[in-house]
Image (cartoon, rainbow over all chains, first blue to last red; front, side, top):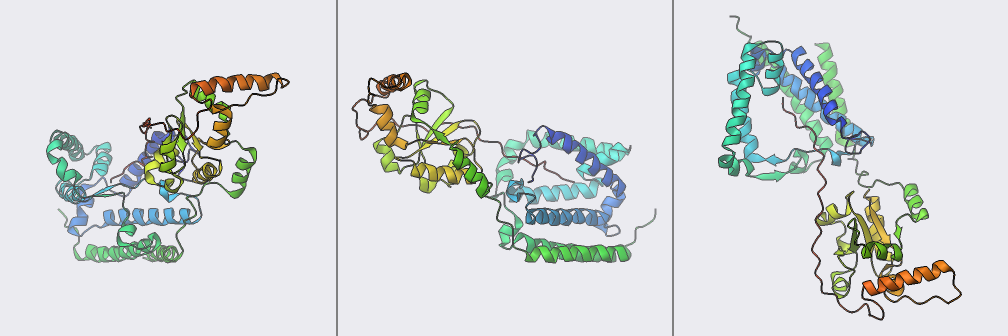
Length: 196
Length: 206
């Protein structure tokens, strides 16, 4: 049956409207989970608050389980789901830059918009910074391109890479996530947030 | 603490189940046996040689001929502007963009109709549309279009009209006593087909 748009059950024109709705929902949940506070976000790096880790990993494992069960019951064709292609070096270096920006700025791109929307000035500055970054990237792209395109692995899935079934991989990731949540909660007790 | 443990247990349980069930591999085939039977019953995939001749004479840009025979046979004789996709290579990734598209009308042909039909059934099972089969294949094409035989003078008017058309078409294709073994050395380029846009899911970050 699904995915609804590639199967042409819903016309393609609805794409943006649905994305708009999902985006609003996503922003709402981010704000509800307290992600508009840069202290909370940076907390994951200092160990006093692991809510970022918990929210995103819960989201990931929920999505994985949902997709696999839908596929099991023939409700979705996983072959039609877009898989982001892997450019290994881009992913690693981009991850480092993003992580560094996360610690320094206290936001990631999505949460900065969220926090800017409730009127936080630091988030607005961060949001402006994103565009400076985009401009720099665009202007130097020719120079960065060899690195950007290096180690292209195609639209590969982790399960294909290590050669186990998607279900088994999902199970391992669930175990890993639960263990991480447990460790993170211990860390929260060990490194309580300092009051200023 | 209890809700978290409960939730963890639920995730753990769902994870165990999904780890043990086999992956769903039934998806690549889109048509049920009944749907297939219906399509075969109504013969909606057939294109007659007269229809094809008409389109070719008028140089209809929306048709794409696909020769299912081996490259050797293709080199000996093929219809104008045909593309050679041997049956054994029908699943090759190279050809997906030609077979699975919504712009041109693909007309599959072989010497008879068996190979073309086999190719058509495979493509239909994969859910591809716009593929058709030349009725009677090249043999019937030669018989009716290249070397048409005159109907008896007492035939119905439309029979005679059909013959007149075929005679004209035969001249166009340079038939009339020409044997099919005569090789046409026109090398046809692969037609350009707009690649279907990959459906992109919105790429998220946090």
